Image (cartoon, rainbow, N blue to C red):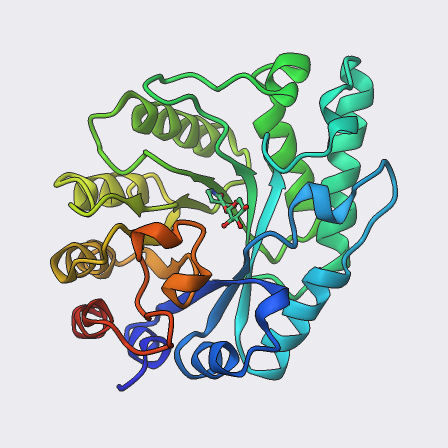
Length: 299
Ligand code: XIL
């Protein structure tokens, strides 16, 4: 096939990108989006600060724009993200009572998932809950007020809200098998599967330096899938976009049957949150970079 999405689809996978609602009117951007990608993650529009800026007051308009675009162009959607310590409005961060925070968190999950019910392939239910260099959760209002059980609470609530959506745990720096953080997330998934806590997938953000993924990335992916979950590469970008680093990353997914797909975190370098690193597959003019060809061949 001659596009990323079609080539990924030939092995039952998807190839996606992060999309910003504000760029949909840029015709170069939209042309590449609709030619190459068959999965979309809203870059910011489904985060708590946008969707529930004050308690009980929901705004889904920016995300709806993206979902409408996806539906009009036959693209599937990843939902990103329901429970995260960043881009969280200050009214949530200042809650100190556990019953209040539990009901606020559950209501946020239920209301957002219900709004998009039936339109989301997979949700990043909880994002970045583990601390770097540790097997433990990081501090956050959720961890500090609700304790370790907040992740399980979020996943159980999410399953009830939209039983047909895949439920993912998503994080960065969990690609190297020997890292403590990887082991912490692995132990959580193993525990959830053994106790019947609903979880379907683990998202590996894959924000890499120019060396690309650690050598153990294929091992990490297959060890997670052996627990009975899918894995997905959810936010891929690589500093300077070396062809070898991109190719190694794509092969790590393609070699694991339960690696469901790959999402890059933006279209052109100029769209990237790391634009100084030129980490994506298209240059600022929308031209394919060498990394594009490396990815297409590796898929
Ligand atoms: C980033 C967006 O790309 C930026 O536009 C925003 O200013 C900050 O968030 N991990 C995640 C993503 O899960 O949501 C983040 O996206 C990048 C790191």
